[in-house]
Image 1 (cartoon, rainbow, N blue to C red):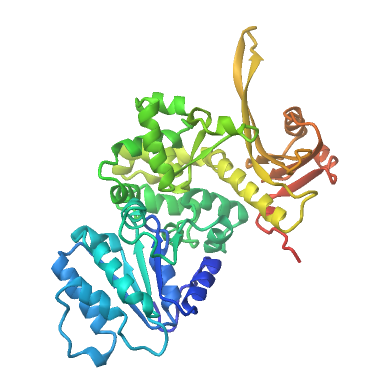
Image 2 (image 1 turned 120 degrees about the horizontal axis):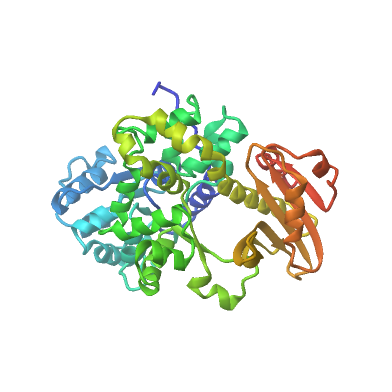
Length: 484
């Protein structure tokens, strides 16, 4: 990197504001930051600390004695004033010293990958709790404990029966960047390629940075994933091993969801697990943020309490892409055939694959319009709708067919509704599709239609445009109006 040049820090503006407000308070601050690998925790904390007195200590897998020695050196090395000191002999002395370090402004101490420290000495949370309760809470130190093992942070550090429970000023479970921030990594791309790239990388900053906008989408995928030495080739394996001691079953579930087995019954069939066992694994995946459960828009509260009525969705676009296209071509990857894999297995399916992401982005766009009062009414909830309907087949038989609506929103009185259809394909949105959407309306009340299309609309659909039938393109979605 050239002197004087720093990469632009994208996103997390509200989070930085919140951390800075905590920094300006008069009380000691104990904060937990956690999130999956590559989500940008360390870079965020560096960004927060860059203009503040800070000790940034990265833990590793060294023995407890060496970890204590290195942590001691980080504390002592903060100022020449302490250069005469020897490393601390115990953790209590080291933690206590944090509150006595002299600075012009509040000191920030970041312990990055804190689970590594605790893994080598499980007494550390209890020691830190005692020092915090008796000494540090009276100081102005700001101590941030950060970890990539979400399960460890949630269960072992933040758990209700753990020593540090109730001591944290606040916790920050860091998630992926929203699409509006993620696509800022691709300023040279067309909006279509931005959406496709986001459908591959999701909002994980590390993946976004690796996905160079000087290359085409195809070139990025081939270079990063479709060759044995690709920079993202072993990402999922590393991530799974971080979270789970035995990841095989979790991977099996994630893989099954990625290829379309979204219901409990289909997942049981694909994985060989019975419903009770499957639910245990699913709950863990939901808790860690890998999976979310979704219920049909019109589902009752009773139905929403039943796992059998849920559709399970991967929250990570990278996982979806990997198990849809990369993992099935593992043998060809080992034979260094990236172009062949792209042309034969990915290219012609990419728009269909990205259509799900497009639907999610369109729903987020509608939320933005709702917040900024840009809709005919304020909706109180929004989501997808699906149901099974018996349909007569050409041979005369009756067969249940799943019907779907990409988007339904309703006001809190249940008298006004928005029905939306999202088409991410290389054809214009046609009248048959609009009529098909209209045929799916089951609610009585004031109905509005919001149609989203990558390639625009046929003339007969355009003639339907009105205050009750709104036509929107990908360019509109990427440039939502503000509240001014």
